[in-house]
Length: 605
Image 1 (tube, rainbow, N blue to C red):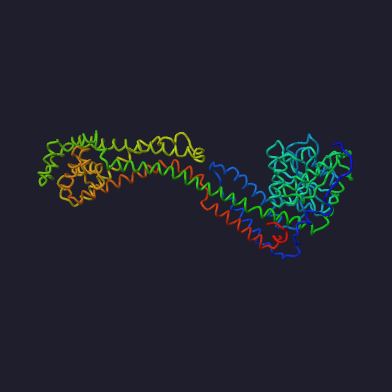
Image 2: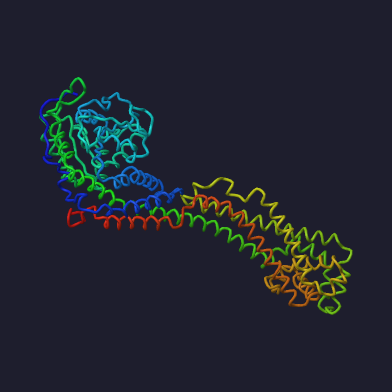
């Protein structure tokens, strides 16, 4: 609070305005910029539609960037374009204890903002303007997300409006929270307010001007083309030249060398907590000239506005890349699941081809159902008399048929449970190895659904009934149906099921014969004797296709446990393209508007 001496400055006329070279609003027709707000509104819609739900390295930065862009569009770009002649908003930012509030109070010659180390850290930011300009800021077009108050408030999301008769029209100061506040919400709000500034007045001290946080924000201001003025506060007189020179060098290194720099020495404050007029005079005079010169204010506004618009494209491109990464990750996760369950389907298909299902219990029950081994060895020699022999062999023997059907069901269910378990494990492992997949996993996904065994049993029973219906339909005009009635259909259906286990086309190979101890040949011969060769092929093929279709649906239901998770989190496939297109439209509208200087005018690339 103590200091003495006179202030120094390197700013004379409003240097921020002088170096931009922009034209004034009088040079453009009223409709020149009509397309720019529409393009920005389209960009805002594209940003809102882009989602980054999957856990990827780019997701959190993208969410933060999207929120910041949306805030800047709503808080500054759209309302400022709607009113280019609105008062110039100077956002005063800086580190804790830099003296921002004391400086604002001194510039407007009234204690409008609480100052001091013990001030509430959650206080609302203070916007002070001329009574003439109060209506504009009260309407809430600028920073519309903040609730206007006429009293200090500790409620988040409020903006304390104060009028100061000593402040000339056309200029307003906004005392922002500390950029290095210990309160996260305050730091975030400070960043949001700075993004809504026409001009940053950055306040630092001789002790803290080299801190990292302010320079990070200053680099951000430079990247966005924001007009910046610097205040170096509380400088000991004996160190003024040295510190000011060093700070100027640092500004030049960051391509901010043209920014006005005001040096305020250490001094006492008066009873109202205001700095002496002689200390603030150079800064007050600079702002007074800026307030009095509409063209200079318009130049500052357009410099910051143009810089903010130009800076949109790289940020939006990064968002588009992050959106594309989300889609790519979702597709990769889906493919890992689909590959696991495709492999399961292939395992079932192979199991129907290689004869493995003919072993064990099914083989024993099949032999028991048809007859003895001697009967099968003489089967081919008596092919002409087979139809009647088959009927005689199976009539009155329901128990072996029931046991065979149960054995077939058990064998298929065992196969389905095994492939489903393997698929679930493979899908789980695949997701666990992917950062986005690992975040979506739950332990129960490593295993099939709890009710899979019951669903698999129901599937096999439904398929067996379908085979019997197939036999009825295919053999509807055959004499054997009339002669043997329903039991012959059941017997033939069981033989068809055995045939499905033997080979795709129901033509047994030597391997299948060995695996089935001749039963595949026997089953084929029985069926051929009843239906004829083509009918046998059709029945076996249709029954097998039906079984695989049912299995495919069962496994798809299992895969859906995973796929539903990516579907719930999946961003729009065209989000990245929509963002890029919207950014291009903004850039085109910006150049067509005629509001901003071209490269040949302001020296920017």
